[in-house]
Length: 279
Image (cartoon, rainbow, N blue to C red; front, side):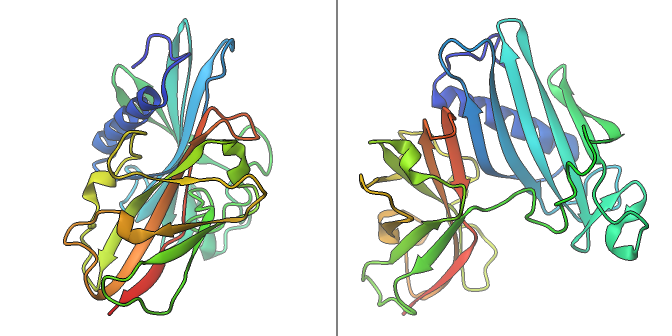
């Protein structure tokens, strides 16, 4: 971990995120996915931080569950830093608290607690159930995806693409996602996962973590000066295992950028999964 995280490069921050994700995987014996993240590391600030959304299709230790989503948070200054994870378990697509599964008709049917994990001596430790800072803080959590949130939608340009023709898609933002925050910089896109047919194997296994700015698996797209709600991409510019051969595909994308209108130094959003056909 960083002795003083202030003034780090984007790659250094992503190294921190990778390390914490790997340590939590070890603590929970699970394979997790890193979703959206945002980093606050402005020059002159007394502290710096990175926050990410993570999830796993595995039980959360200590809780009867089959899936979980969480907020991973790291904050530090010249005096050192600390990391915590606020985990929300689910069972059969319903949130779970210490009282049980909310969908089973509990008197108070909202998420009013979470599982706290704290990082100490290079490992995460389960601190048990904890209450939020205020009433209703997590009341909007009703189903899987509410915490993990995939804020981009992708529209395909055709119902079916011919083999070796361009695979044009349009990445559309949802409210609260500001492409213009990149200023004159180029947005960086990468593939989060690609499945072909009924296969569950990810055809971009090298992208299990957010790629670095100089990665060969990143495609840049210039942000137009006028306000825009979408960006056009050709998926053939991305390499996948076995290439884009005929078949039915299940795909998700990531966008990365920096210095947005909310003041984040670095940030990333991911898309909801979308389908396309190549003949």
